[in-house]
Image (cartoon, rainbow, N blue to C red; front, side, top):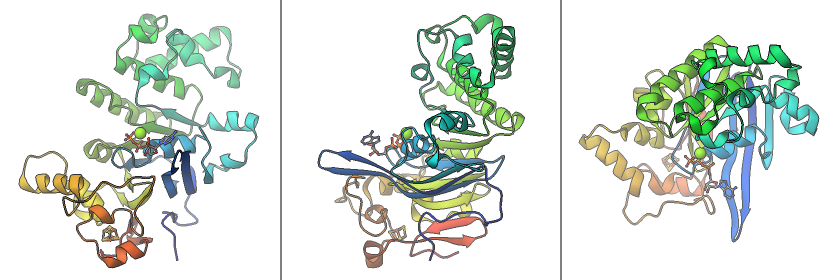
Amino acid sequence: MAGSGTAHLRADQERALSVENLVVEFPVTGGTVHAVSDLSIDLIPGETLGILGESGCGKSSAGRALMQLPAPTSGRVVLGDTDLTTLKKNDMRRARAKMQMIMQDPVSALNPRRKVKDLVAEGLEIWGFEGDDKAKFVDELLASVGLDPEVVRDRRPHEMSGGQCQRVCIARSLALDPDVLICDEPVSSLDVSVQAQVLNLLEVTRERYSLSMIFIAHDVAVVKNISDRVLVMYLGKTCEVIPTDDMQHTALHPYTRLLLESVPRADDAQKAAQKALDHGPTKAVELPSPLNPPSGCRFRTRCPLATDRCAAEEPELREMRPGQFVACHNVAP
Ligand SMILES: Nc1ncnc2c1ncn2[C@@H]1O[C@H](COP(=O)(O)OP(=O)(O)OP(=O)(O)O)[C@@H](O)[C@H]1O
Ligand code: SF4
Ligand SMILES: [Mg+2]
């Protein structure tokens, strides 16, 4: 029987990135934080896969583990043909250049003492760029993310807006000619007015540089907008993998449905969904902790469809419709 970390593509389908049974645990005083438990991801070349879930469900821990920063507790991360989890330090540096991460807070991701031109050029020595060639390439990269090289190349991060800093981070990641870009809440710290511009830039960039992208966020509308498929996570586990097209109507997992219904609309259904997310089916329920996740289905303490079986038995991720995988005992296609 397939586990909750089962693959989501046919064996013969090409993958830009393949993640198998990823586990990330943090030993802490009093126990272990189960941040990511048996997560599998298959990234189709050229697609954007959204990873959606509430704060604390393990999205960033998963993203960092893909980059091996730090390496996961267990599981395999295969980028193209290279298994990152078995590489030695030097090989890792080169292989990791092919997968870049854009973080939530662009200002703190950049060394405040360095100028933009040096920040973008960091890492270029891997490809042997020096002198005029390097300066020309840096200018091209800055222009490709919508920044005027003349204006910004000698600035430092604190002399620019958050949106401009995020553009610098994107330029810097492109310098290494990656195949895969992992974006961890890349617009959530930016002003609403510039969020759409940066999202648009990411889409244009993905197409122009033939990238495959993982887009991590807790904002349903943003994830739906930018992704081809969405992987919904709850307390470190996959609930559902679903093509974005029409997911409002096709989503089956009770958690995905609540997330979709809780998107702000100020109607009664939205209020009910938000209440269910906040409190679970009864007000007495405490929100579960990754230090001590619930037995069986981890969503059961908040699930409106929970039955006795849900406490006793963990649901397997099963393909309900072509390309749509759901881990739930009590839904059918
Ligand atoms: N270094 C660490 N040591 C101990 N616990 C950690 C560490 N990093 C993350 N955690 C815990 O792991 C769980 C998952 O955290 P993570 O940051 O991956 O969630 P997230 O989905 O990215 O949340 P957010 O949407 O708030 O960014 C949380 O309970 C968090 O407190
Ligand atoms: S397995 Fe049970 S608790 Fe989990 S989502 Fe399905 S119905 Fe809800
Ligand atoms: Mg996070």
